[in-house]
Length: 189
Ligand code: ZN
Image (cartoon, rainbow, N blue to C red; front, top):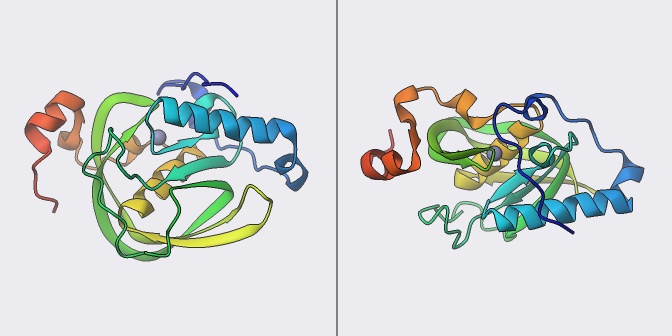
């Protein structure tokens, strides 16, 4: 296992749709090693999620975390509405998202591939994710609130989309210091 380099915005691999992972591939040592490297890299960078394209592998696999005590997201809300989401971290393979509630829910997002910036993004507040798990079993999960945003952010990476694409109000795209000084206490609309 190894901490891998995280690709930064501008790298073309971050902008292409990732390839689906086959059933046999999920069982391969290479794939387990890839997921292990994603875990190590995410942990080293203190991320709350990571997608394979971010370490240069254009495959449809992402790790999604529900932040607890993450130093990069000290104010992340607890996922109170979905107590069945009792995981800390989840590996999702070949995911598809459907919207359960399209009422917009906005959070300030960050990304390991866009270091030093934060941006305010509104996304559907409740979603269902169908995916294959690390054992190769089909699963589905409903997520709302901040967890729904983390899922949508990571799964966007598998479509070549970055959160900055979804910042509607460019006044709400900021460097970290400016975010903390001018935007951190803003009321959410
Ligand atoms: Zn990201």
